Length: 502
Image (cartoon, rainbow, N blue to C red):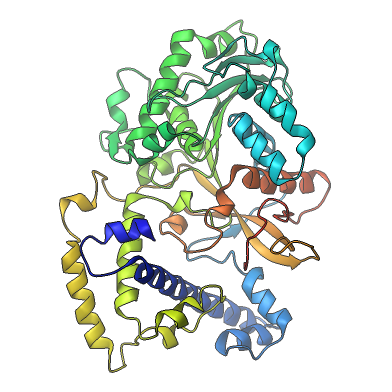
């Protein structure tokens, strides 16, 4: 809310107004979603499906059973605005298993801080001493690690690797040009894995906010880039700089050539680049720089930033890159244009409000708020006055000035194909602690990049981004495949205590 308040310039609103506007924006999003559900269910009814209770619930508040309400709130949640389709088993099973397998590398790259957090949140206090003490014998070869070697020791514990399986490790994070990364040999998977760490420091935040667009083709003289990279290909400036720095270090040290080249210890293995959040963006861009030199290459990116590359470049990465998104994660939907669209939407909703703030706040956790009770309809008497106020507000914030784009050339997107683990059911369980009685069931779907073009207002927008929760969802679904089941599993009972609603 404070961020949006700053983006609104000098218009006469306070933070509580922005909170109310954001709540209305969520209500409008949910209203549009309800309309899509009605159309979806009507199509099912025309084919003979028994969905009368669900339609009654959507068309009129509170008349139907709890079972119908629960079915509507979750069972069709994956139905987005775009072309969602279910994964095909067993054809897509390898992709799902790989996501569940390689996510440990993305999580391990975070080092001791994330492992400590996970141990404490899960109540595993016995694991805390090993996390914070590390081991002197692991320090050798882990450049940039702390004096106890805890990051490298944590990486080995999380991934289950031995010291000799790690070919190169750098935990240097001294400026906004480099992030920690580890190169490991996975003989079981016949892969060399480069894992990049996600945001964890102030330096990482500087990389995240350096969101101007930069031409990828400027690196053509230094790296052998794919033909799909043209003079118009653009990428997130901060992340492109980080990826280029990592690529230069790998080339300068000869790490990948020694492993994957002729006579190397891993000759014939594939190169897998992975990471979470900022690390996912760096991994995808690194793959772009290394693919021509080290085929075959795959990029498995967990919760990558939405404002990473332009649409044409993102599409060209479909054959080797998979972006994995869990639930209503904010980061894959976050880009500079998306933030300004959110700002515009909040202003429009705020100026068209006809209810007081107390009434608006009370709808924050309702699954489908009655938008007609909160905002003026075009046929109502106060609509024209609301429109006039909105025009004045938009003029005040100067929506077309140069500062609006912040150096970003149009919309940018996640790279490659998008695998979305969406909630299809939330089960209630008995629990002594408030908010921890939920078991979320996830199911993977193939989505389109444009399904994630706009920010979804939800209390889960950051909870679903947490690296340990992302790992839990994808590993448990992969385990369910190995166990012979074809339905997803996933629980946030321990990891998101205190979360309320859906």
